Image (cartoon, rainbow, N blue to C red; front, side):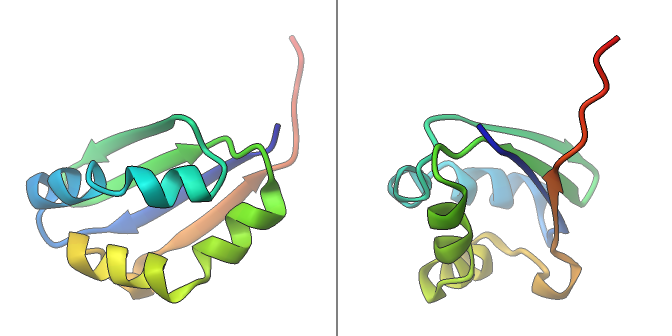
Length: 90
């Protein structure tokens, strides 16, 4: 299962979290059953483990996702996406 980390700056972390938690249908459409996240000041990091990487990325780039980010106060120009593609077993 792929793992994807998305980071961004947000205008208001409390408002972001409240908005983020309303997008369950969107995340399920992106083939995710759980979203892990961290808030550090005005920066957020989200870890997604979609069942279908291509479906996730297609919907991540879709207008509905952009609308959701705007609703949540995400500063779109700060969004970074990292696909975890290295593993170091210790």
